[in-house]
Image (tube, rainbow, N blue to C red; front, side):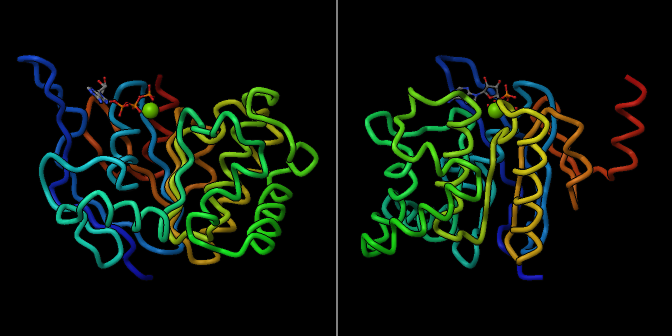
Amino acid sequence: MKLIAKLSGVGKEYQIGDQTIVALQPVDLEIRAGELLLIIGPSGSGKTTLLSLLGCVIYPSYGQLWVKDQMVNNLNQKELAALRLNTIGFVFQSFNLIAPLNALDNVMMPLQLKKIPRAKARQKALDALELVGMLDRKNNLPKQLSGGQQQRVAIARALVTDPELVLCDEPTASLDANSIATVMQELVNLSKQGKAVCVVTHDPRLLQYADRIIEVDAGRATEISKKDLSQKLALH
Ligand SMILES: Nc1ncnc2c1ncn2[C@@H]1O[C@H](COP(=O)(O)OP(=O)(O)OP(=O)(O)O)[C@@H](O)[C@H]1O
Ligand SMILES: [Mg+2]
């Protein structure tokens, strides 16, 4: 299947005063269309950092990163924003919904940035809200929604542009078992339709949905088989 993203020795460090924090050690990774990649590991291990690099939200400190055929290291902020808008759907750990906009307007936002005509944008946004079971709350502001409902609106916003690369940071953290199954099944469907989907989680129950697994521990990201990870988790 088509290569969507490629990391070659990509890592990230932060400088705070005279302290250097290595958030992610150099990693090689290829992500292809048609697969659901699970990124799993404890708090502070570097999962969001890895996802943010893939999502072109932060620049790598070292290594080379390609998303589709673009070398991300060489892009300026404007080019990066265009790449994000056209290729990537990102569900942030903190949702990042726009407070004064209702659910529908939040989901329509990326389509308006893409200059899609308003009527068409509205219909696509309504479809996306329906997919996550939030159609009846379309006129609500984020503060009028529960955490799990905000999370579902954020998922609708990430999917509404039909992105080739779907990145979700703990998309099920605030959801109950039923909503988890719905959301994960939808992400599996997207991967089957030919998208590349990456999901960050702490939750081993999501293993069943994964085609591939990256385990992140103390800034080190390594691929692990489902079987090996299940055995490892059973030992703890
Ligand atoms: N902007 C930043 N400045 C300084 N340090 C940072 C920054 N972002 C992340 N870090 C550090 O990098 C490390 C990895 O952080 P990251 O957010 O990737 O972890 P995580 O695995 O997503 O954790 P969680 O499961 O709690 O969300 C942490 O030690 C964190 O403090
Ligand atoms: Mg995180």
